[in-house]
Amino acid sequence: MTSDLLIAAGLGEHARAADPPGDAVARRSSAVRRAALGALRQPGLVLAVVVLGTVVLWAVAPALFTGHSAIDGVPRDKLQAPSAAHIFGTDNLGRDLFARVVYGAGTSLLATTAAVLVGLVVGSFFGLVAGFLRGIVDDAVMRVMDVLLAIPSLLLSLALITALGFGTLNVAVAVGLSSVASFSRVMRAEVITVSTAVYVEAARSSGVRWFTILRRHVLPNASGAVLALSALEFGAAVLAISSLSFLGFGAPPPSPEWGSLVAGGRDYLAVAWWLTSIPGLVVVAVVLSANRVARAFERTGARR
Amino acid sequence: MTRYLATRLLQGLFVLWAAYTLSFLILYLLPGDAAAIQAGGAENGGVDPELVERLRAEYGLDRPLWEQYLTALGRAVALDFGSSTQSGTAATATVAAVLPQTFALAATALPLAVVFGVALAVASTFARWRWLRQALSALPPLGVSVPGFWLGLLLLQVFSFRLQLFPSMGNEGWPSLVLPAVALAIPTGAFIAQILARSLRQTLEQPYIELVRAKGASSARVHFGHALQNAAIPTLTLTGVLVGQLLAGTVVTETVFSRIGVGRLVVSAVNSRDIPVVQTIVVFAALVFVLTSLAVDLLYPLVDRRISAAGASLVSA
Image (cartoon, rainbow over all chains, first blue to last red; front, top):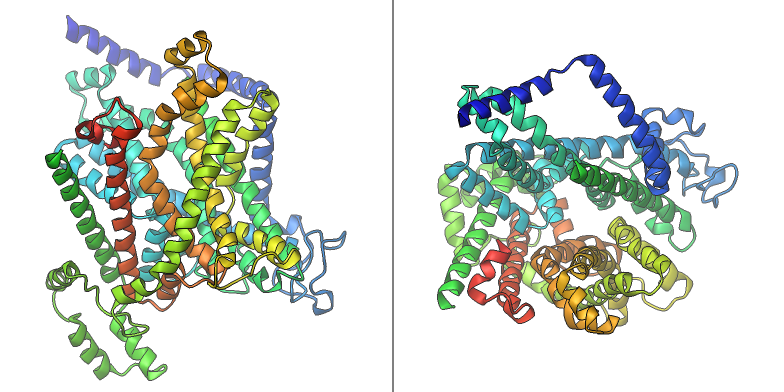
C-alpha cells in the first residue's frame, strides 16, 4: 500500500516534468509579468541589474561606448582631470581612463566568470559525490573542505598562483579553486535534502537507475541554491580578482584590468585622484550590484 | 572537560597536518621547478644543467614524491620549512622576523572592527526612526563590497595627502598604524555588522523578548540585557574566519601602505616563487584559524549559559 503511494508520488513527479509545452510558455510569461511588477517595487534591484547589464555590454562591445583607444595615448593630454572630452580623465601617458575601464571590463568579467565556473563545477562535483554516496567518501571529502575553509581564500589563491604562474587565466583558476569549499558544502546539503525526499525514495523503489535519479531528480532540484551562491560568489570573485590584479599577478601592463588600473594610479595619488578612485568605484558598483542580485535570488529561492 | 579539550586539540593538529599536506601538494606537485628557477637566477639567464642537477639533489627533488613528502613533513614537525630561496635564511625565521609588525596591525584593526561592527549592527536595529534604521542597514553590504586596496588608497589620498594628518607609508610609531588599521577594519567590521544585524533582528522577534518588553523593560535594556548576548553566537562562530580574513587583508593593506609585514612578505615570496616562505605563511594562517576557533569554543559557555563547554562542539560543528 505504502509502496503504491510512493510510486504514485514518483509518477506524479515524472508527469510534472513532462507537462505540455504550451503550459510552460504560459507559466513563463506570467513569471515575467510577476518579475516586472516586483521590480517596480524594488528600485535598488533594477539599478543593480542596469549596472551589471551596462558592464556586460562594455565587455561585449567596448567600441560602442568609447571612441578612444585603451592602449595608445596622446602624451599632450596626460593627467587631465575628468571633463566632457574625457569623462574619467586621462592617465600619465594621456590614455583615456574611461576607455581603459570599458576595455578592461572584458578581461575582468571573463576572469570572474571563469573563476565562478571553476568553483561551481569542481565544488558541485565534490558536493554531489559526497552528498549522494555518503559514508566514508562524504567524510573524507568534507574533511578536506573543512581544511580549505581554514586557510583564508586570498592566501590559498596566492599559493595556487605561486604554483601555476601569473596571468589572468591562472588568477581566475586560483580564485575559482579557492571557492570550491563553499560550493561543495551547499551542494552537499542540498543533495542530502533532495535525496531523502519521498519522490526520490519512490523513484528508487520503482527501480529507476541511480544515474537517472541523479540527472532527473537530484540535480535539477539541488541546483537552485547553488546558482544563488554563484551569484554571491560572482561579487566575491570580482573583489578577489581585482585584488590579485592590483598586486600585479594578473594581465601584464599595457592591457587594462580593473585592479591593475588602480595600481597604475598609485604613483599619482597626490596629483591625479581620478586614476585610483574611478576604477575602484566601478569595482564597488559591480560587486554591490552582484550582491544585490544574489540577495534577490536567495529570497525567491526561500519563498519557493 | 579535559577529554573535550584533548579531542579539540587533536582535531586542530589534524587541520594543521592537512593544511601542510595540501600546501605541499599545491606548491610541489603543480608545474614549475624551484631548482631551475634558482639556478637561472644565479646564472642571470642561462640555466646550467649541471647546477640544476646538483641543486635538485641537494633539495631532494630527484627522489620519489612520497619520500620528499615524508622528509619534508618530518622536518616541518621540528618547525623547519626549508630555507627561503630569496634570502637563504630559514623560512620560519624570515616570517617570524616580520610577524610583530603584522601582529601590531591586526591587533589594532580587530578591536576597531569589532567596535565598528557591533555599533553599526546595534544602531541599525536600535534607532528610533525607520528611515535611519534603513539607512544604517544599507551600510554593511556597502562595506563588504569595497575592495581593500581601493579603500586604503582613498584614505591615503584624503588623510595623508590632502589633510596631511598621518604618514603615507612606513612602520614608525603609532601614527603610521592608524590608516592601515582603519582600512583593514572597515571591511571586517562591515562583515561583523552584516551577520550580527541579521541575528539581532531574528532574536528581537523571539517570544522571550516580547515577554521582556511586556514587563516594561526599556529598549536599551531589551537590547543590551537580553538580545545582544544570544544574537552574538553566530558571529562568534565565525571569529576564526574573520581573523583569517583580517590576516589575508594585510596582504593588500601592507602593500598599499608600504609596511613591512607578513602580508607584504607573501607578495614578494609569490613574485620570486619562494615556495618555503609561501608554505610557511599558509600553514601559519591555518594555525591562527585553529587557535582562534579553539579559543572561541572555550568562550561560548561564558557568553551563552545555555551552552556547556562539553556541548560547545555541537555549536561549532
